[in-house]
Amino acid sequence: MTDYSQRIDALITKIEKARTAYSRHHIVKIVAVSKNASPEAIQHYYNCSQRAFGENKVQDLKIKMHSLEHLPLEWHMIGSLQENKINALLSLKPALLHSLDSLKLALNIEKRCETLGVTLNALLQVNSAYEESKSGVVPEEALETYSQISETCKHLKLKGLMCIGAHTDDEKKIERSFITTKKLFDQIKNASVLSMGMSDDFELAIACGANLLRIGSFLFKE
Image 1: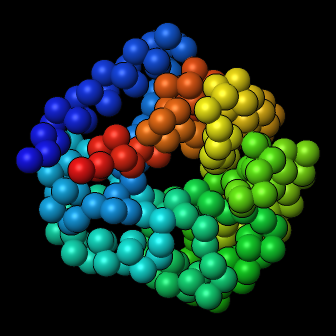
Image 2: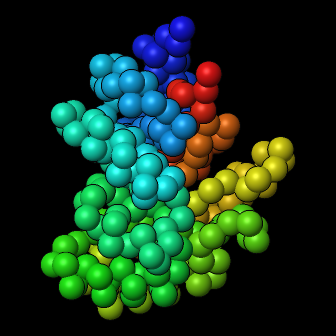
């Protein structure tokens, strides 16, 4: 039987150590990635005071939100967003879209938002590891793309950046991808959210300035 409180306590202990080493004033938020979790498991973490949860697919987000609508949870969309799922996502009104990966997607979302009369908070995804398997804008184009979206998409509220650390065992390469994203983040006026770090690399992400973590297997692995 999973000891949910023990897992979340272990995670918070690790985060606190990394956070205070970076700066005792630094605040870090956890988004529990519940893509493989049952509503019951999410309820257990809610009982342990976890409030923010993230899903990779719009359909899964819809199912979890509806089955747990009696709880005051904060839902994040962290996976790639297909164009044909934009309306479905907007109808769910998530707290934050982490995976805005192109100007084209932003313009499509803006068009739907305008039609529906809604807004959407989002992060621009940066492919700071330069990996073909990852979505996102390359670092050299990130600031210009961020500015273009901010200027042309009034219903899209950009809050900062997201990246996925380099897929490697080489810690230096992972660190480099985080540092690259943090340097971009520091150049964006009014950016407040830097979403970096998952179960295997969140301590390194915090050391590089992350203030929002996407934690899945650490919490939900059987």
